[in-house]
Image (cartoon, rainbow, N blue to C red; front, side, top):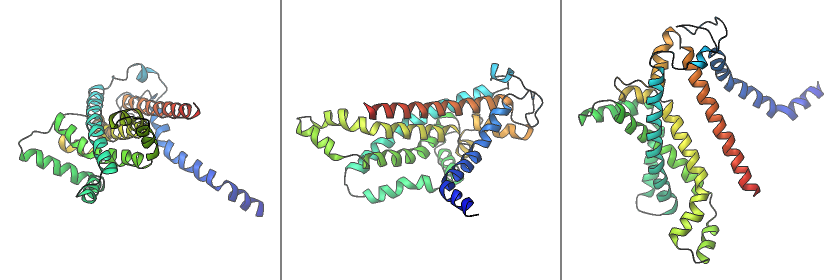
Length: 264
């Protein structure tokens, strides 16, 4: 009994890690497995193994157009929110001004506000200005939602920088612009990249805010939601699995590049 308790004491963290990862990856494994299901119109029950879904991922009606809309919205929302959020993060992290504390609080409001409240409020605002729901209102809504996450991520990276590195560049007769371009920006770049990936993932898989502001336009999450009642088509599983493996590859490559830079 003592040996068992000692073993658990030494390996408890590993047990927790295995349980946690198993819990997290069960939905991923299910999605990947049913992407090979020879399901036809309904993908609720396993009917046989096939590669046809991977050979023709656009086989289900509107699935690829919905995916295209999500990618375009995600790209634009990521671009605008990353630029705006990075500038706000530098302003809050490097400069002292009147109202800085209030601005910090306001930055957290979109993160603390329930999405259904945020989506309904933005829809009401668009309707007041006689802007019909559609592509660009959805992009604007996603930017407003994602910019807070970008600010928090980039600001944390800025706070971790060693100011002596910039001071050393100044001592070597570099002006403020050169110091920012050659020292500060490369050091903050990993935080900006992480913020951009986070913004894209939040925008790509958002349903609630999108459902309020997209009108008749279909995005990939809306397609999955409307298809859920009759069984999500296997092509949606193919796209979901592909997006997961693509994100995993980006993370692995980023980690590899980061370690290579540290070694060099």
